[in-house]
Length: 226
Image 1 (cartoon, rainbow, N blue to C red):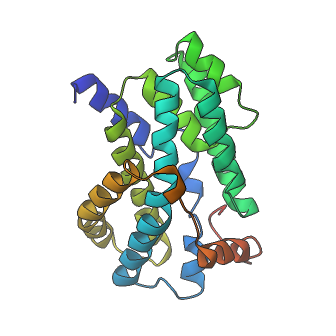
Image 2 (image 1 turned 120 degrees about the vertical axis):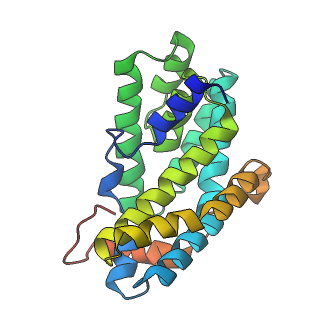
C-alpha cells in the first residue's frame, strides 16, 4: 500500500474519528451486565463469535459491495446495499447507532471536501446513511485499497469491543492489548471471508445478540447507547 493510502486508512480507522463510535458497545454492555462476558477469556470468545458469525458474514461483505459500487460510480448498486443494510438492523439501538455514525461520517466527507462530485451525488442520493455507506465513500475518495478498508474496519470494530471490555468488565490495559493482539489471525480470516462470499451467503442471523440489544434498550444502568 502507498504511504498516503495507509495514512488515510489509519485516519478512517482511528477511534479519534469524530463519529461517536466510543458511545456504542453493540450489545456487549448487556452481555457484561448479565455475566456472559466477565473476564479476558469470555471477552475473547464474545468478540470472536460476533466477528465470525455477524461482522464477517454480513457487515463486512456489504461494505465490500459498497466499496465496489462507489468505485464504479454505480448509484443503483450503492442504493441497493445501503437499503438492505438498514433493513437488516433488527433493533432500534442497532439502527440508530449505524445511522448516527453514518450521518456523522457522511457530513465529515462533505466538510473535508475529499470526494468528487460523482461520489457526493451518490452519497447524497441516499435517504439515510448507515456507517458502511459513508465509510465506503470516504475510502474510495481517499483511494484506500478495498482489501485494506475491510481489514481496517474489522480492526476498528474489534478495538472498540476490546475498549468496552477494558472499561466495563473491567480488564486491565495490558489484558486489553493482549486481547487485541490475539485477534490478529481471526481478523485476517474474517477479512478473507468477507471478500469472497456470494450474495446468497450473506447472513446476520444472531437471535441471541438481537435479544441482548433489545434488553439493553431498557437496561437500568448503562454507559453506552447500544
